[in-house]
Structure formats: C-alpha cells, structure tokens
Image 1 (cartoon, one colour):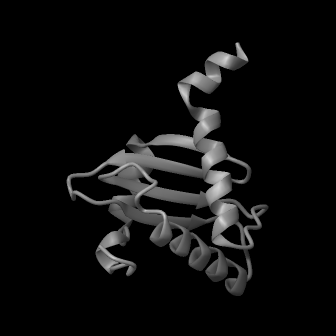
Image 2 (cartoon, one colour):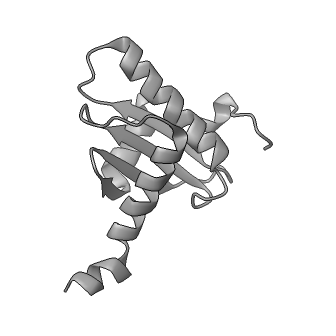
Length: 119
C-alpha cells in the first residue's frame, strides 16, 4: 500500500460504524477506545469518532493525528480489521508517537495475559 492513505482505507458510512460499535472487541485507553472487528477486505480500514470536542480546529487536528498514526503503523495493527478510534474530549494527543504509545498500553492492558497478572 505504500505511504499513502487511500479513501478505501477509511470507514465512510454510518452503517459501517454501527456494525463495528455493535459487534467489535473493545480496548480501552485513557480517554479513548479502540474497537476492532474482522472484515473481508484483506486490509484494515479506519474510522474516527471524536466526542465532546466543541472546537472544530481541535477536533480536526485530533483526526489528522489519528489518520497519520494509522498511516504510519498499519503493519503494527492486526490485518483485515475495521477499526474505530473513539476519542473523548479529555484526550490530548500532541503527535502520532503519543498515540502509538497509548495504543500499545491499551492493547497490553486489555490482553488476557495482563488480566491474569492482576488476579
């Protein structure tokens, strides 16, 4: 796929989001959630949902940072998934590296191994 992020790599319809929200597996991080579900596309698709951020400038910046994170780290994420990145208003990512670190922490904290260690 190279370094571009084609429109086919994005979820664009509300029906696509609804399926992911209803049936997807959730990983919760600090002030964001990742929701994954299998797709039959052969590649990952990203959806972004920013909740409670009133200013369009801040909302759009958050979306740009998340798209950049996804573009740079598509190989890190599990293949053939529809992924919705749901961000709450308290979330303040400054760069794609911060997003990468937060995603790693959320996935590791939600893994079955991590849950066994807490018991």
